Length: 258
View 1 (tube, rainbow, N blue to C red):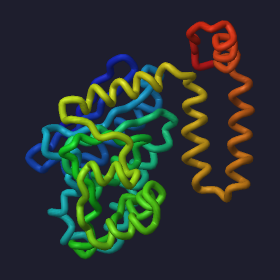
View 2 (view 1 turned 30 degrees about the vertical axis):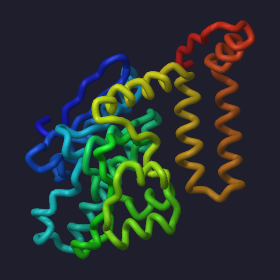
View 3 (view 1 turned 90 degrees about the vertical axis):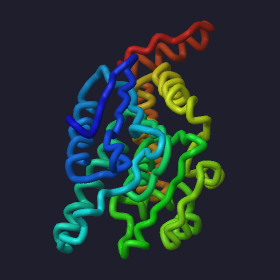
View 4 (view 1 turned 45 degrees about the vertical axis):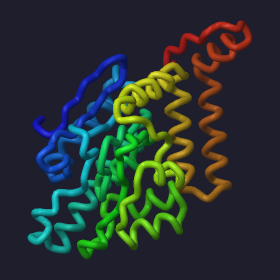
């Protein structure tokens, strides 16, 4: 792989996009490499959580590489969007928590990639936006869907229709990011957050992710039924028995993921 670097340490897979000369912009090759990385991470029991970031200090992902857009036909453009959506959906639904370590520009496809992660931690130098309307386009990697689910319809429409980027502190205020930290603290903060999650019951973490992600797509009463079914599955696990016993015995739990 030439555009995506991976490093596994303490069950945390750090995925780094590496196209610094293009501000880590997404093209077909990068998206395909991400697809392979996410498939392998989903299947690998040694991977418990993911951190996504970009090479350098200027950009997480500055957007899509638009140099090939003039040659797109409507059918090719639809296929381009659908492939990116499928890859980002894989990240969101793989059952393992992911954290975007946003170290600079997260624009267009970069903002959409960050939104597909379970959480987002931003450097104070980060900027977020969906500037596609300035190119005669709309977000194509599910930005029109994930953004309003994160920040609400009104704020999402303002960002999408104006195309204006916002700084990290504003992204925090509207709920687009979870935390804002100094640049030097970005990756250590993400690793600490991932490590904290990995200390919890693995099956419960997976079911909690499923309950939230799938439940948002259902009517509320159906989402409640889905949550109750997943709650029932948790009760059948050894991890639940261990967690309750450890709590009652006032000792740290030793989860096995069973």
